[in-house]
Image 1 (cartoon, rainbow, N blue to C red):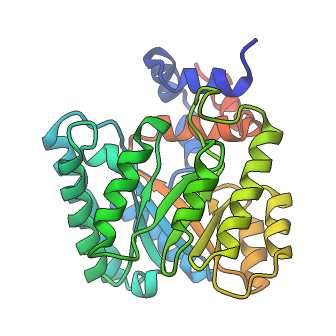
Image 2: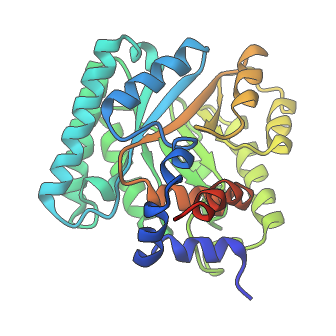
Length: 305
């Protein structure tokens, strides 16, 4: 029997379901809970709002699986425009607002060299704006290629962040490899429908893997970025007593009061904020990560006339 998570992930790849969801009258109002908006003005506005509360931000221009070099270049240019606007808004200094980049969106499905060149242009623009870039991780078939690109980028831009997904069997080893001085590593549970040969399947096993990976990163010399909304994991991290810097990362629209509570208690918190009109795949992965969020979208679909 398929789990609800599997059903949601299958729907994320179904064009008919996408048309249904996108056409629902209240879809946009529900999407605004999780997505800043469609354009760069929305991204800048939300960044200002969050940084005014003492939060930091990682912005993701939505889009992935680019199969055309022109489209990949357009995505790179969208990031360059975003970074210019963020710098002009005065929110990038010290990495207060950074950007997250999916290599598939800048050409990885075409060639690793094309993706590297696009990511390098974004890193250069980020450095000029006084901020950083984090390379998002995608399904397991791209992990080695993404980490190889990361290593090449870090030769000139050592603060480029990595993302590791705890549900993959390999990730504890990857954490050990990347828990080095100056290495920024975002640890998340994982949001893709991976086979049992490469990934833990049960929630308890994934939680245990996340805890093991967290321990490695928090004991290491790098800069851990703990992407979790799980109160048990947050309290566990706090209980480790790390004195070196680290941060929590939470998604835009999920547990905003917890984000503010952690900041008020003196902890560093970064909010992962997506923007753009290619929101469907992102939203479905968020629902798959936490199926309780599905109730918000079902209300939108129920109002469809």
